[in-house]
Image 1: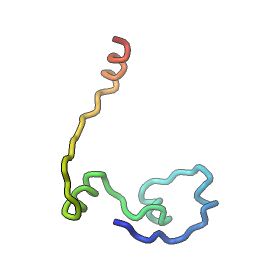
Image 2: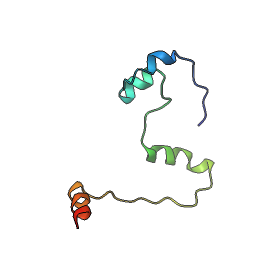
Image 3: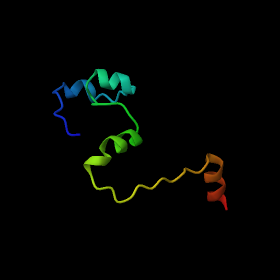
Image 4: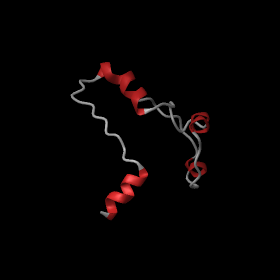
Length: 69
């Protein structure tokens, strides 16, 4: 998925600002908008995948109560 990135003025992007995905794409800061699942599905045939593991995040309340116990 390597694409040559167009040159841009680094000063205009180094001010600590942030952008939504669509804005970042318009400014050519990113190449595409998608999820990690989208990337895996798009690239699965190009690589030898050994394993994919999904871990469900704990609920916020469970994270706090686990640290108290």
